[in-house]
Image 1 (cartoon, rainbow over the protein chains, first blue to last red):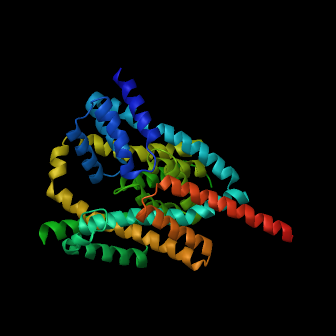
Image 2 (cartoon, rainbow over the protein chains, first blue to last red):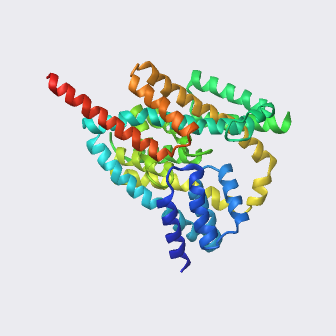
Image 3 (cartoon, rainbow over the protein chains, first blue to last red):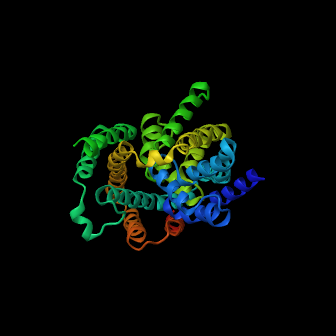
Length: 188
Length: 190
């Protein structure tokens, strides 16, 4: 039955995609393109592109897209649950122990060691997005320097200033920068 | 905290809006959740937010799902986790269901592309803001060990392409070991 197949495939996507971001693409590709032939490579590339244009993790977006295509809304529900329930249950278990033992000095020490690293991880992800916005590539390369997108630089600078001074809800920054994007890239 | 209907409504709407704005990769949830749960609602503190990110990053599957479940569980147990899981899954589900009907037109639409281009710069700014706030706080704490961990893990992930999971593992073990050593020293003095 197709529902079982969808569930099984996306269970694997949910359980074997570590690290997040683009690292999980090969896992999804293997399930939906190579093994089950549910999508062509071209369709899979489209899903990745749409994921970049819509909110939500790529795995969940792919689950909805593939599920809908194969078995309608119910298929999408099955695939979505398949890739989120195992990790949700794991999060519950780990969360339970974290909140039970987080006042223990050893656990405290572990997380004190982790926090500065997490800030750095957020920084590396932020830099990739920054370079994508400024140079259209995820890493800095000297030869792309002349192609710098000055409009993006101005939007970035303005947003950062507003955010640091006004401490607004980041959602407003996102909505605002999207609106400014229309003016900057279509009107000007 | 009274867990009435109003509480669950707030919990649902907060995680729903975070999920609906998770553009550009999982880490955008950090500024979004920090604003909602730490600064506005005061439901969790800053360090706990980073701990939740650390746990979510170490688990398989989408980070936003793990982080939402952890926050829901922390605030209202299993029912809370169920509410936040549902509210996190709904936005991408609804949006993709609709868009999959006409995705070719959506993909090539110039207005959509201009909005996204602008948003990319905005997202980079809100992430930069969070990194600046948290990073400066760590530098100001004058805790040499924390500053070293921050610098070393940045170099490891950004320049040396070392796996994120490995970096988390090493930093966690390092934090644990230094605590044990510090406790032993403290114990001898006392």
